[in-house]
Image (cartoon, rainbow, N blue to C red; front, side):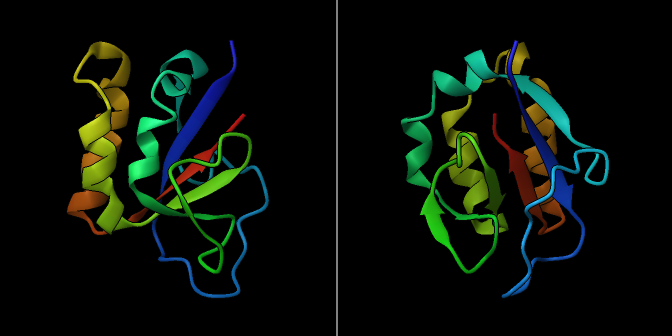
Amino acid sequence: MAKHEFGIIESAPISGQRYDKYEPKKYNCISIDDYYIEGIQEQLLIFDSFCHTVDIPMKGLNYIGITLIPPMSIDAFLSVIDVGLEYAELRKLLIDAKNRNKYVIHYGL
């Protein structure tokens, strides 16, 4: 099954810095089955994010690319995902990033 991967970026992205490489190990990414992301994709459009670089703002997740989720958007993301077991690991990661004021990286399909 197709997966989305989420990790925490330890150093805040800066203007001009691109995240174009697939590096899930670098960010200790967790995997979420596409089934659980696809079902909430429209609802995720409520939060601000960036596409590959902080120079390209967008809304929600870049479904087939790389998304940078700023700390200020994490609460909105959390408000969309369920508290069920399928999201438990993602919720934990998002809360950790929020508490540490870190960006989250998302690798789409």
